[in-house]
Length: 102
Image (cartoon, rainbow, N blue to C red; front, side, top):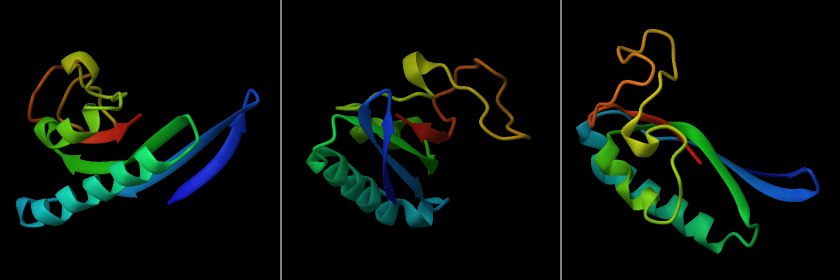
């Protein structure tokens, strides 16, 4: 899903996605991330924000990190993004699941 908004006179393309949980969905999720990257790379709007539930480990987010910045997981610091998250605020953990990206 894509929505175009104007913030402080600048256009921002906002995307939202939700990938499936579980290793049985790994191939489909990799394809979805690839498709998302194609959309982002071809979007002429210079400012982009992608939100969603990626259900992905840090390593699965590597393709996104090549050209885009993570809001959560930046510099290896992970923040809880939902109630009941077993990770404390600011805890580092390579296996933590990504719930958002910018």
